[in-house]
Image (cartoon, rainbow, N blue to C red):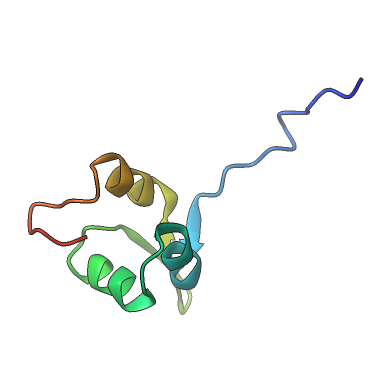
Length: 71
């Protein structure tokens, strides 16, 4: 019997804009709008912009609604 090794399992900390869009089933433009409105948090590494996994989870757990009505 194989046991899962927890050290091999890694949780992603951030997603690219296309990955975040696929994960939420929305357009990449919508993700960019959510980043611009600060509904989602971003991390910029060099020229690459990523969306934090925590902010994606927070948006989904909140039911997809924000104070500004976006999402």
